[in-house]
Every structure is written in structure tokens, then in C-alpha cells.
Length: 236
Image (cartoon, rainbow, N blue to C red; front, side, top):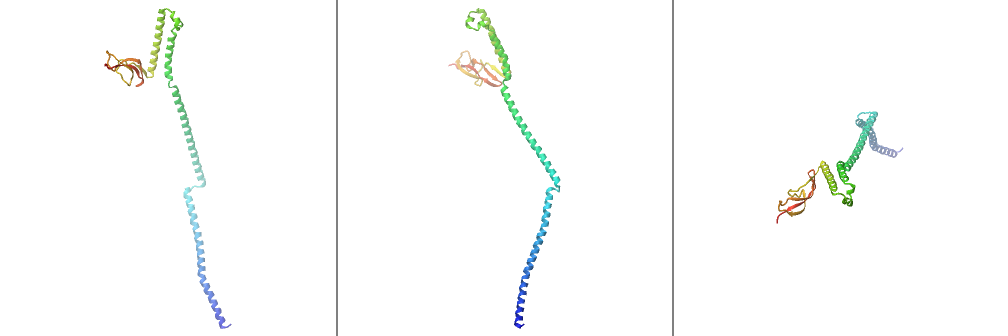
């Protein structure tokens, strides 16, 4: 081989060596990086798994699956009991509401029952007063044929019966807090009296009641009906 060929061969070999030498650091760096990455990922998986297990253990309090299942079943049982008690409470409230409404309705419907019962005696007395009038005196023509003394007796009996009826009726009203009042001779009070007319009365004081057309009635301390009266007017 000539000297020139040897020189060319040496130059080519030198160039290849240099290229390999330059490429080697990059290859080593890539290998090291790949190794480091694989090592890092592998080492990271262990702590991550351990952390998850620790979190799960803390959340469950270290209890087993059977214990957790039993605890859940107990909670569900208590919840069902609370729901049942709540529904029962609602049912009781609805029953109370219906019962109260019924009692109120009955109270309103029968509030007058006692008063009406007290009036029954009055009705009986009034009936007896009417029965005291003989059949022959209930007709005007027949009554005209009767003896005057007999008519007087029947009229007296009728008056007695009606008077008894009035007395019994007033007693029944009083038992329920209703009382009649007659303001004749009293000073006129617009809260208790209703003036129907005025007239001068020389022998009476002006502003006083001298005539009562209708008696007044009080229920407890409240005016049920004012007395309808005539009042003495001022002298002109």
C-alpha cells in the first residue's frame, strides 16, 4: 500500500472515532435519563400506594369490612325508626286537628242547647195558660153567649197563666246572664236607653225617663237591647 493510501485510511478512522466519541455522551445521557425516570416512577409508586392505604385506614378507623357493614345496618335501622316516629307524629296531629274541628262544630251547633232546655218550662206554662181557656170562649161568637161572670173567671185564669209564663221566662234568661231592666225615673243614658220621643212634663225633671215603651235587656255587663223610652224635655 502506498503512503497516500495509508494516510487516507488513517484519516477516515480518525474521523469515525471522533464521531463515535461525540455521540457517546448523548447516548450515555439518554440512557442515564431513561434509567433515572424508570427509577423515579418505580420509587414514586410505593409512597403513593402507602399514602392511599393510610388514608383509607384513617377514614375507616381501622375497622374491618364486617364491622363497617354492621355499623351501617345499625344506622339504617335507627333512621327507619326515626322516620316511623315522624310519620306517627304527623298522623297524631292530623287526628287531633280533625277531632278538634269536630268538637268546635258540635259546640257551635249545640251551644244553645242548655238555653233551649230552660225555655221548655216556659213553653209548658204558656201551653197550660192557653188550655185554661174553654173551647166555648175561644170563638168570639160563642164567647158572647157566655155569662159575664164566667168570662171574668176565665180571663183571670188566662192572665195568671200568662203572668206565670213571663216570670218563668225571665228566670230562664237570668240563669244565662240575661236580665231585664226598667229605667223609668232614671236620668237618660244614651248608652243604655234609646229615646223615641220627648215631651215636657211639669212635675218631672228634664232629661229623665218618664215612659218605657220596651224594657232593656243586659247580658252580663253588655247591653243586649237598649230600653226604648220617652224623655222629659226642657221647659220652654
